[in-house]
Length: 229
Image (cartoon, rainbow, N blue to C red; front, top):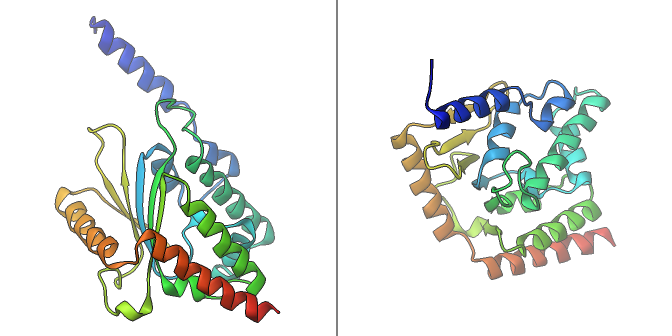
């Protein structure tokens, strides 16, 4: 009995959208499909990674070696599927989301601990290519990468990895995502989000600046190059 044409159009659009499955459903059962859906619709993502290079900034070879090492009992076909999904996710850094043409490339801000740069995932040549790719991606105007060196000691990120997703619609809540082994945590309460946002501001303030970060990564690349000789 609804007569408001705008409301009718809105409800019809929501019904249409609810029948559309995200691209990731084509890959079958994905453990973190909820997160992928949020990431696909997000306008910006702030992430802190203490141990590995963020998924959106990984090369294919690095992702393959990482998945094989992190989940040693995973079948080769499932390893390939995880890597394919990860590579597809990276399209958000260069493309709009198909269901929302007004949504531009994802604005990514990544603070990465030095441990992630020095942890050998694969051999020295693979790590060299990965770090070169990290610098290359950091030169995009909507991608910011900062490194947290060991020498800075204790900092607000020592409690572990997390990500903060923000959306173009002001009515959508900002979400804090914390990855787990068997289940993930999604925080939407304003008080929780504020605490993590403030913590991230401290991380950004303490980490190396953008130019210093590229210099720092380049130094580690040279170290890997020496090992690869």
